[in-house]
Image 1 (cartoon, rainbow, N blue to C red):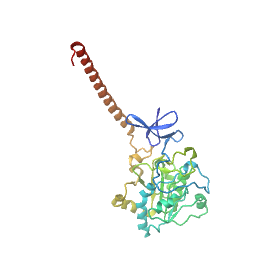
Image 2: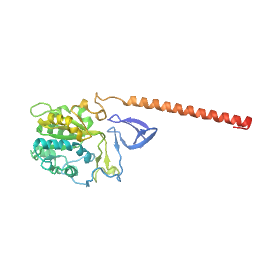
Image 3: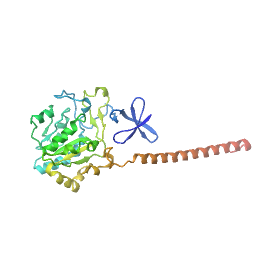
Image 4: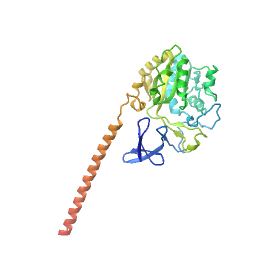
Length: 325
């Protein structure tokens, strides 16, 4: 097997068939398939695994051109992580959870309505329509916050950041960790008056696993959940951003297990993009430490084996010469 490193700087071992393995102790454990084009491991979870959300996702037709690999529903855990921020926005706007208007412009299978509804947010707009046509024709629905996990292909990510930055309204976007390291990122955050906004970031402790709707990714029919990228939330609450960050640092963090970073260089190390210069390169040191421990254990095992062989040789010599042990 050959050793590979993905975009998140995680190490895997790949066999001839493309199977990806993690080294656990002295054994290799299969975790998915290696995608050579994207330099990532597509995690595999059997269909028998129960999705984290209880929402039944069915196959749907779409009113716009789609890329099949983009079709993954956001897990309920990701929404749960930002519920405290939605509740804080309700407090700021003087609304109840059932009155807060949430807009998710990218339609997949509609599970966002039920997922957020489970937390009391019943005013969620997510329809099977072409978002960019809606914007061009100035038909965006009234909303208090735009909350979405956009498609990752083509120009969808920079497009949604540009639209949100110029809207002047609160937004919450769930995208891969590498986005803030891209050359287009800062340019997408320009407002209508030419200033640049600064989002803050809400990170989970581990990877989110996304749910593939029925009827998509037919070539990977045995995969119902996937976690190809480390992802976290990028948030901006317009003129309320500073107040929300201040609230979180004082009281909000007690309500959740997520980490808030006000700047990219304050992100947790395990969430930083692989090309972030602030990310500490600890993999080599970890491997050296592991190799050192392994050599030590091997030396100890070899020493013990030599001692046992020497004792056995001595016993046999005594048996042969004296007929005793």
